[in-house]
Amino acid sequence: MDDQIRPYVTFTDADRSLDTPYLQLDIDSSLRFLFTIRRLPTHRDHDSRPCLFKWSPVGDGFVRGGFILLCHVPSADGDGPADESIALQKVEIAPEPNYNPALVQSGSVRITKWTPRLWELKTGESISFQSSLPEHWERQLRPGETYELLWPGGTIGLWDWGSKQERLGQELRACSETGRDVLVLPGGVRTLFSVRSVPSLPVPRASPEPVRDEDRVPGAPILSVELQCPPTIHRQVPYQVTGKVHYHPSISQKAKAITFHTVIFHRFIVANDCFQLYRRKGADLEPIDTDDPHDAYRIYDDPDVLVNVTGHDNFTTLRPGESWAFSRYIQGRSWTYIPRDAHVGETFCVQYHGGTVNWWDWGGKEDHAGTKVTLSSSICGRVVDPADNGGRPRLVIPASNIVEFTLAGSD
Image (cartoon, rainbow, N blue to C red; front, top):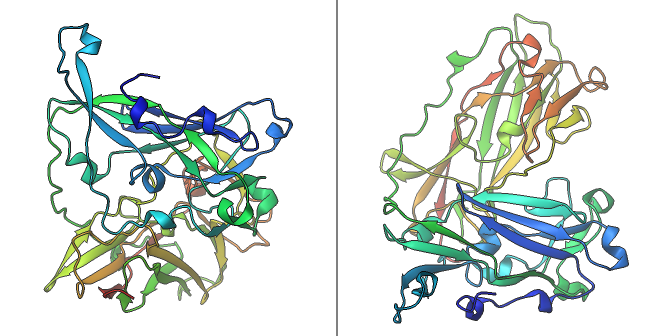
């Protein structure tokens, strides 16, 4: 290990427990930052068992006690070789004011197929996360300077042996509750990057135009979205908006059931297939960027997945007159979409902007017992085959109503 980074490294291979999986973090900054956790083989007999663990670069990395930013500065003794004339200076970064590190790996989570940031690895497998520096980190960078992003090492307190399939519906409890040894992710890995220009302040962007009723395509089912939410939100208290997708009977068509892909309702995502969060400015609504606060991840090397539409969580069936309910979080205990400068009493709004369903077909579960489609490998993967939805007309869903809530003081 380089002597210059040794003082910053808090966990090494020597801190591992022999009764835990052997995980290793790699970092690549060739484009954005690519973080890869690999599970390496050991000589333990139980290495063949899969393991589950909860970790993300945003929730566990870009926080106090996580990644360290080091700046290259000229050494006081600059007469030596070029690689010795550079010193590493730690860049101090103020923590997010609304972030509570005690809540990141505490408590427990229920294991489902899609539990956020819960990963399963067998020996030899890896999981990758792609992310940019958080905004409050970028503001510390200076043009023309060279930096290193260093992982000093850390522990993962939510992990256990087993697979998601084996543990569906069970609770994954913290090591502090179960007596298991914490899982060590050793430090020392780092990546070099340069800054050509100072990151600019974000420019308030124009919100994309909501999809209108007139944008519906003739011949497709008629769906609409209705949102509801509690009137107030408190800092560090989970808060969610609930919604219903209504299937309206058509006067011109015989009433038929439909089966459709629900992925466009699953998260705040870019483009028109999205929920938009606003802050109210008098009579105007100012859109708020809602990049995923948990992490920006992609699962690399995984193939596309063939699924049965009646057995997958991201497909549902409705008959005319029925509704499908969903909910979306605006805030969790250790993350929030609400801006850091928001003040008590400020009003925010949410609207589903509308979009196009990625895949749909006439018929209910009994009609599609054998229907299979191919999803891309990401957790909210889109249907990639059939790409043209079988030639059926596009199912366009107009924008929802706008719901409002107010930031309250401490609960």
